[in-house]
Image 1 (cartoon, helix red, strand yellow):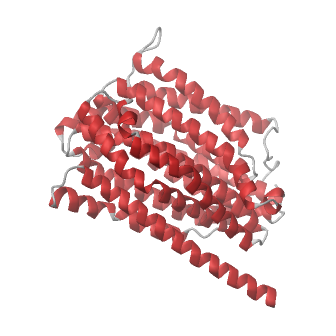
Image 2: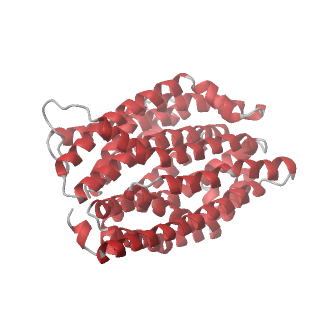
Image 3: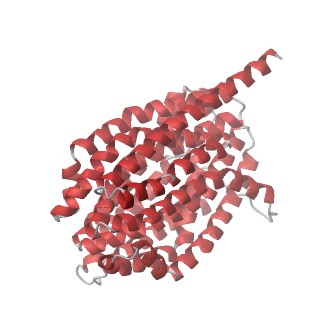
Length: 456
């Protein structure tokens, strides 16, 4: 862990990010294969998965309250040379994660039918997709505490500088899910034919296995951290710290999900093919998004360690190295979306209308992917510093602007659906550029304060 404070920022970031990027690549592969299997079950099934995905994103956005706060605080305590306090933070984070899972999961599972109906809007042609989506949502959210536990456990290991172990454990879950998906979706051999429900069952079972591996290794002392033993009192200041850091970006992510739910009926107004095409776009874009997310998580840990050790200027250097890394890796991915959009789209559907709409989506969104990565790395850096309100303000503003933008383009101008795609792409670019300006101002302030300290 001390190497995070001394080795070159580029090397440290590469070392942390490489396993995370591999994990994100595995998750991307799973998402693509999962979408491919469900897509073969029909357009309604794929549209149902797309409708449900917004609320699954909402779950993981809420998990970020705990996982982001835990990652940042544990990294800062370790950087400051206080390992016992870091272990206490980890213990509180795990408790908070499980409680959050129950608070979120049970209500959503209970009201899944009403939620899916709301997302579908008033277009009757999307009703079948809404019914299937309700089944998927209800099943996934029953195990929300397990998903929360897994994410919090992984965030703690990342804070300790161990990004390989959670990658290996999640790889087991993804591989198992990959094998179970076709069995439960199509009823191969003795397995029941459950369709969309089968995809949810396969996912839940796989993540139960992931949780079991995490807990088994923790119990045997085979993880990078050991929880405090004996009777431990609750330190409410730790919970306040977790929430103070994790809540702002989580609110931003929740609003992002809610905005997508708000614009989903506008997309559905163009028909179920448009919803299915949007789902295809999300599946393909998960490659660049999860790459960016991996770099963002690595940045939280690296910046957190250096900020905790008082090396503020070095922490800023680590952030700019993360930005350079995103430019080098996400740029080619965005170019592939532009050049191979039709080939990507045709992997998930044989419907020519769906393929055409998805192709236009990927080509238009491709222009914003590099700036998406830049914004996510900078947001990760602010989380490492424990200052998450400024980037959250930028993120919320550019996200909420999608609602009037979609209304203007779709309802008032009566533009074709690609007009909606341009709204999404341009606002993502605006978010990235604003983040660069924001962090530039912050890093200048850090440099000024360091000079004043050195002079005194």
